[in-house]
Length: 297
Image 1: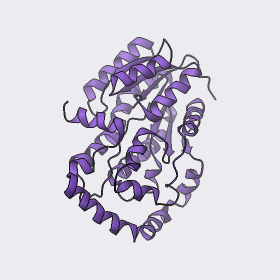
Image 2: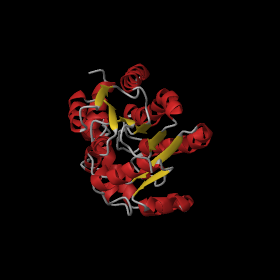
Image 3: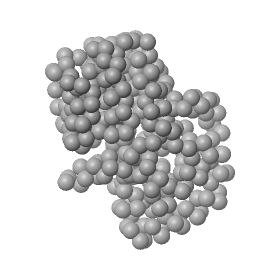
């Protein structure tokens, strides 16, 4: 376990949720926080909570130029980057056949390509510091819940990226971790649960119906960063699921054979009533901020 005092930790998606909470906890342990996200007012509040040495940069992980500028300014300010938590992400519920295609693709753009861009731009600094890279995947990479196809695909890709990078970078002194967490009490998850169709789908599935406290996840993430862990599981039973993941699609299919047809009909009705864009809009305040950014507002 490495002491965090003085280490420069860059976190994307730091305006809210797990990113903001982990940043505050790392600051308590003496880390120097570089916060990257979309909502400047929220980022400023988090930075103020993280102490006078914390900084914030408004940047969109889907915009390589703004992200590059942020990373270069962070490196110039602190002189180094010791750890990166690639955390920025959104969720847009909807069945693939009826949801807004732009919303489906936006999830891939943020959750997968945004992580890739973060890795690409910060890796030169991590090679210098022999640092640590933590990619935030999800239980969705293992248990593919109906109604979250784009999220499942993106998080599975993040897991594969982390597993590959771990082997590619170990001899260069950079350690790579992949975090898998189930549903945690954040603005994004509350937004999914408030959806008139897909909130009921999510909470009705065994294992993923429970929502864990944010503080529980924060402790696991901070411990993982301190130890430069190869995996972070929130909760620990996710690790056991990886061993039997080959059986999980069959279990999900069996468990969904009655609930999905009803939800599918309800989703089509919701699309007819509100439109595909509203029905599959990214959830929570962070999702709204990303949607406004994507629309050019």
